[in-house]
Amino acid sequence: MSETTQAETTQTLAKFAATLSYDDLPPRVREHCKNLLLDALACAVAGFQGEETGQVAAFATALAQGSESSVIGGGHLSLAGATLLNAYLVTATTMCDVHRATMTHVTPEIVPPALVIAEREGLSGRDLLVAIAVGSEVTTRIGIGLDYPVFRARGWHGPGIIGPFGAAAAVGSLLRFDAETMARAFGLAGSQAAGTFAAWGTPTVKFHQCRGALSGLMAALLAQQKFVATREFLTAKDGGLYNAYVNGGLPELVTADLGQRFELEQIALRLWPSATVIQGLATAMFDLVEAHKIDPAHVRQVRVAMSQTAFDLHGGFDTYKAKFEALLSAHYTAAIILHDRALTLAQFKANRYDDPNLRAFAARKVEVYADPAVKGSQAEVEIAMDDGGSLRARCEHPLGSFENPLSRQQIEQKFRTYAAGVLSGADADAVVTAIDRLDDFGSARQLMDLLRNNSAPRAMAAAE
Image (cartoon, rainbow, N blue to C red):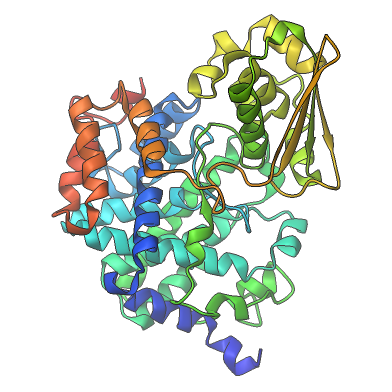
């Protein structure tokens, strides 16, 4: 790619983000964006079961005084506070989306700032739908330009680095930015890009997501004030994203077939609350337990083959400490699916993961190893029985991936499952209907009215 073409990367993407309209979105892309929104809302109402949610709610309440914005399943907070808390809710229980090519969770950064601005401005469901598409496409496009293997080898974590760009794009779309203002918003977003895998194994990796959402919101609101910022952040020679974070990156991928092929369609969803690259393990385990009557008491050993990447991240939690490590543990995932034939947040309550028999099974009878023949999120499971028989299953494409997508009905059920106890049944049903008809839904304020727990005067009321 020539220097002239490189110098236009940010501005080309900014023009796309500023001008994308509803009519530019193919029907399948519109439907996928609805899926992304509904899934994010399902994760958010589940987020009140997150161990750190109370801490983040207290921080968000103290961040800025105000009550103009709605908290999903809660009360009201400031614009900044609601963005931060809603984003953490989406990611709190480890079952939000992921763009597998960049191992980046996208909706925690995109949906919350889009919701609070659409609510504040009284914009339509169609406006919100376009903003989610814009933000998701910008995030994933910038991500594929990063040359991910190099990016990951340096320890960078995607959500806090590329998420702010998408958040800024979503807000800019709602505020009708022109291309110049959008480019400045990208410069301000990039100036806040941060987050590394040094945080792995701690809740800080989830903080990367909510901080990315807030950074993008701040970038867009400051750009709206005509704050001077670079209009070519991605490929700037001195400190541009692709030169500072990787060795020049692959900027040609950012704009290749832009508007014709939508990278956001590659964003995968998760039906189950467990880590991204063990969704293949969960898929294979459910294939086995649904096809066979397996009595765990007669299981001699469970052998799980994973990719080297998955093993490095999740193969070392055979003796997990508590809930967060259980969510990351391949050993626990295999053991609990075999015993309960289910994997919801109920399987991650202390009275379940602390069961001594279950802990012993996970530590002694589940073997997890890296297999060069297994790639990415693939998994192969072999269950050896006491009678000498064995059962096998291999997952090529985890449930929720582009190749093996969740149905709208499955996403709706996920939302209803976790909305119980947070929203009324009538409001939950109305939310599902509103998302299905988002193209013609009148006002985002009506959607937020349905999502807010109106009996909670402050955000912490529902968290408590």
